[in-house]
Length: 132
Image (cartoon, rainbow, N blue to C red):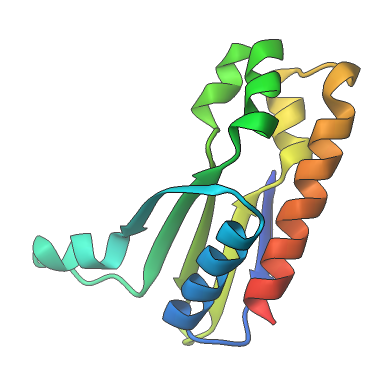
C-alpha cells in the first residue's frame, strides 16, 4: 500500500499481538510511550462498529526537539504515531509516517538530515520487529 508519506507493512500476527510487540519494541529502544488509543473501543462506546484499530503515540525528546527547534510546526506531527489496524479481509497492517516525508512536509533543511535518517532507521527496525 502506498499513500504519500505513509509506510504500511503487513503483519504476521493479529492486531493485539502486533500492537503489544510494537509497544515492547518502542520501550526497548528507550522511547517514551505517551498514549495507547483503541479507536475500535471508542467506536463501541458510541454504538458503532470498527475493525481493530490501535494507535500508539511515542517519541524521544532528544531526537524530536532538535527537529522542532529547526521548524516548530513539526510539533503537529510529533510525537510519532503508529497505527495497527485490520482490513476487511482480516489482515493486520502497521502504518506510520515516513520521517523523510515529515522533513519534506515541514521544509526541514539539510542540518537535520542525520537525525531524520536515524529516526527512519529506528522506526523501520521497530516496525520490522513488530510485524514479523
